[in-house]
Image 1: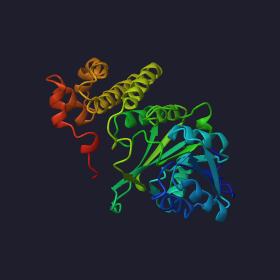
Image 2: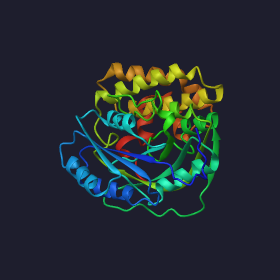
Image 3: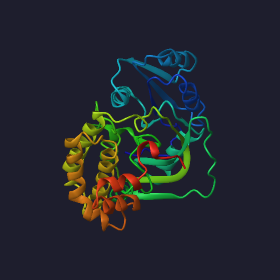
Image 4: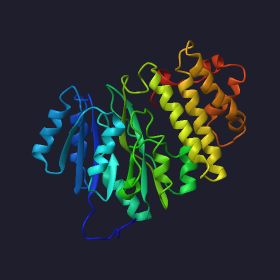
Amino acid sequence: MQKDGNSMTQPLISVIVPCYNVEEYLPRCVESVLNQTYRNLEILLVDDGSPDRCGEICDGYAAVDSRVKVIHKENGGLSDARNVALDVMKGEYVTFVDSDDYVAADYVEYLYKLIVKEKACLSVMNFQPFVEGTMPKDCGGEIAINIFSVEGALIQMFYQQAFDTAACGKMYHSLLFDEVRYPKNLLYEDLATTYRLIMKCSQIVCSDYRGYFYLHRSTSIEGTPFKPLKYESCMRIIRQLEADKVRMPERVRRALDCRIVSFAFHILLEVPQEEKEMRRSLLEIIRRKRIHVLFDGKARRKARAACLLSLAGVWLVNLFVGYGKSRKVD
């Protein structure tokens, strides 16, 4: 998959930005991409049937920079917006930026250089989260870079250690998306997709550098009240993960069980008490796996504590675990 990193011509890199109802944040996002130190870009702005001025803003940028291409489509959700752009992109590599976030000037160059230097198919950097009305903190400090095999990367991701499943903050060789797309009409689509991309790699490179600035909003998926689609998405994704688990080594399967339990807890603590069938299904998943997670020394302490407390009742987990709206940005 890897081209010669010493080629005189920089390869084209596609940057995909889905846009929906974010006119307040979109200019900051797009301008951060336009101002990249890496110049050979194809910037795909996908107006996902946005009811505000997003489409007009996108067209304005396309009129002044030939690298910008705008796709106007009926609303189909984040997965559909990404997929439409993946179907037409021309870059040898691709990265995603959410339209309410923004990136450092060297975001693309940094991820690309990691791929070239380590002969990897996929590179990862950390997020720097911030809340509305504030600026991201300057973390500074030494930057650690780690090279992972496919097995090692899956373990790190499922244990939520070096990195997580988010589509953004990563660069992918475009061939990884052959026969892989984000699932439509589901929330948490990254969890259903990123591991499949990793399984097609030779190796993965991960850096602690925080060049992706992630905005926590009250109107994000995590900040909105419970709706049945959260439960339905969770159950469909867990079924997919369980089906694919048979192709994974034992150590990866253990890590995946921890991720499934964490995911099930996350949704369970949002499901209203009156939705008894939903709660029963999620509790059954947790009960099947919680002893293994409880005694897995690599599992997150929060997940192990939740499993322990759940033996006495979910009400106790609710008191201990700060999920959803109670979570804060560090």
